[in-house]
Image (tube, rainbow, N blue to C red; front, side, top):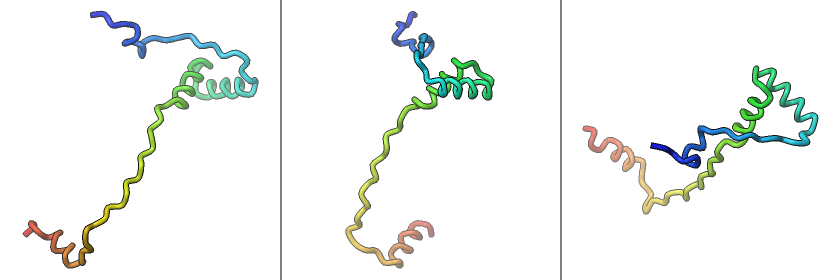
Amino acid sequence: MTTSHQENHEHTTKDFLIRNMPMDLYIRLEKAAKEHHRSRTQEAIFTLSQGLAPIVPSLKTPKPFKWEKDFTSDEIIKSIHEGRE
């Protein structure tokens, strides 16, 4: 069974050229690559993959639950022990 290029995109690579990179950024990339024992390309790929990690949407805080009545501490304790005897 063959898969289309589109379905198999995670197993392919693509060339990417960065032109006019600021020298200070290039030096930082080169230094990081040496520290991590990677090539500049490997370091750039790693750094991009970390920076482009999927963004998890923030969860909305639910509204506080409103009880229909106030419970006494005796009612709460009774409910906790209910069915455990």
